[in-house]
Image (tube, rainbow, N blue to C red):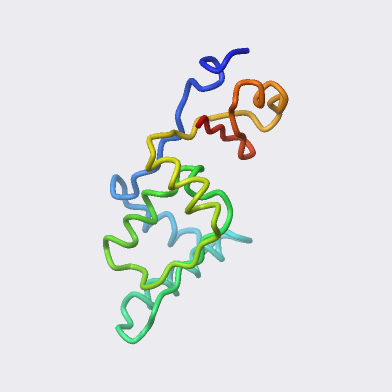
Length: 132
């Protein structure tokens, strides 16, 4: 398999401004497990935003930008919904910096042959490929 076949579909970020998920997240408050925790977290976050004396620290770890979540972080910053960001280097260097240089993240396969990817000079982050 060649590079062109492996790099067919780019990771496309979600645009949270295109829909309103408030009702969905509130309804999750009547569900179990992590659905209820997500609803509870959203309520706490809403109270934090309303409290002008509260500083909101967003901690980023893992492969968030390569997964397509960079635009959400951008929107949080642009709308003054976070005050401080603490991030691992992977989000900043290995993902955001490469995209700033014009590289893209592609939908991949977690079971891809790593030797084949190496031969094609493609890096893999679980099920995401990046070609530099």
